[in-house]
Amino acid sequence: MHHIGQQLKEARDAKGLTLKDVTERTMIPIKYLTALETEQFTLFPGEVYFKGALRKYAAELGLDAQALINSYNAEQEETADPEHQKTTLAASKPPRQTPKFDFTAQWRKLQLKRFLPIVAIVLLLLAGSFLLRKLMTKEPPQVDPPPLSTGQDEEQNDEQTETNSPGEPAVLVQSDTSTEEVHFMVSNAAELTAELSFSSPCWIRAFSDGKRSLDGTYRPGQPQVARASEEISIRLGNPPAVTLAINGQAVQLPETKYAYTITISKK
Image 1 (cartoon, rainbow, N blue to C red):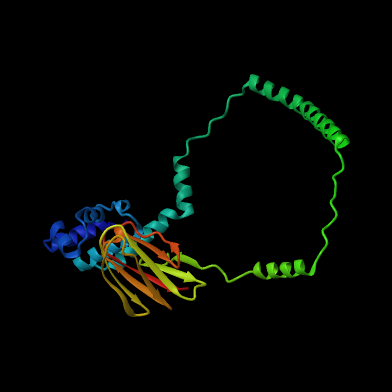
Image 2 (cartoon, one colour; image 1 turned 30 degrees about the vertical axis):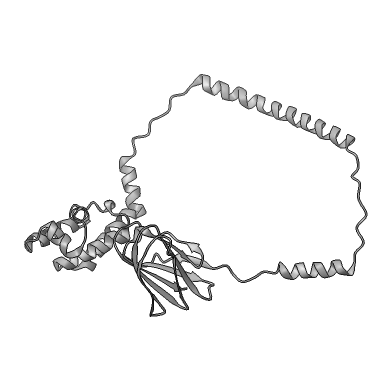
């Protein structure tokens, strides 16, 4: 990865800091600092958290965080390049071996090809005979006369047609993957609602259209709802304890115990 881990370790050593010192300053666990310095990026729960930790660590050491992110992205694009994968596969592909001719297997295939048409013809004849007997013994269906139509029935049919007419488009909730932040976009909704329930105590602070709407520590059995016209911002202090539904639709939250902010806006 263009020696990302080496740059971080050299910068930390130059400042005379230990991993424990950096953890106390940035609140990044030591195991993730070690993963960054050893370039074991798959230990992070997701790329969003990896890049967030890398930015914070680099900023603490006085390094150019964006340059390190660009270096990582360039390496990922190079690895995903089809030409690169084709070259790697070609290098690892074993030499082609000429198969041995199996006379017995070829003879069996030849016999099977001869008998398949005969079997198919027999099956078709049997199926045709069965259908013919079924048609000859089938009684004509009895048709009941149509019921008399009344004006009341026509009115009910008209009302049912009006009831079944297409309604408003369904509300759609999507996760915004174009940003490293936790952002959900809602389509076809007149109002935004965020319903929060808790499995253990959790402090939250919510802003609805820029105005504070929730602020406090809530416990199981104390569900909360935030509403807004355009945007809702929610800060979670204990994310694993929270279940979130946006406009009645349950959404998946990142699996991390560290505090972060959720933004919900109209698309």
